[in-house]
Image (cartoon, rainbow, N blue to C red):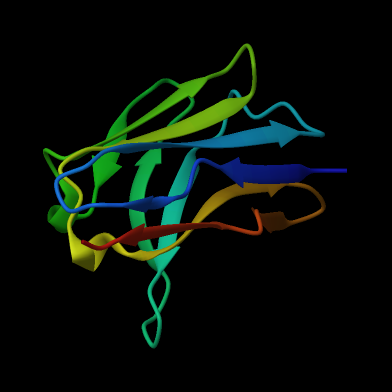
Amino acid sequence: QVQLVESGGDLVQPGGSLRLSCAASGADFSRYSMDWYRQAPGKQRELVADITGGGSTNYVDSVKGRFTISRDNAKNILYLQMNNLKPEDTAVYYCHVSLPRARWIDYWGRGTQVTVSS
């Protein structure tokens, strides 16, 4: 059974840093892209960053230069290092992966709350 469990969310002041983690289990994730999404109150869920199995990364423009996505394939952990946080980064952050089964299936964690406020 595939499980994704996020952790690391917290209340932080503007300009602060957090590192989110996503512990993945139940499959071999190393060959597949994994992603971080976020959803702020009243807004649609948006893709923040993704990383391929080989380590290539992409970011939404609003976090480029501030966030870094990485993965430890040996431990099946996905990370999101967030620096210089801004109030507009406040959201629930979700870990996501799509895996091939009989068809491609999307798996999501339950999310971790990040609040940036003074």
